[in-house]
Image (cartoon, one colour):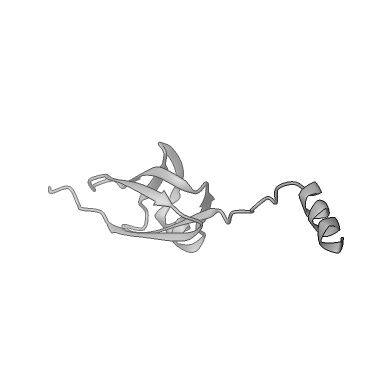
Length: 95
């Protein structure tokens, strides 16, 4: 009887929501003044993201990292829950 009562209470509560930890993006770039775009929107400079990673939805994202005098770099990433660190040194444009 007790088990049936307990089971009916659990079933009445409905599905249990699972809270997923958001993704956090940290970028360490050379030059540190590089600008980071996520899904074609400016997020922050690499200098800021190295100190204060930003929260993003988990899943696939397109990153573009740019700086004057350097070739831009595009990256496709799948961000899981927790912090993901991207380390990159942009290639300078030859004189």
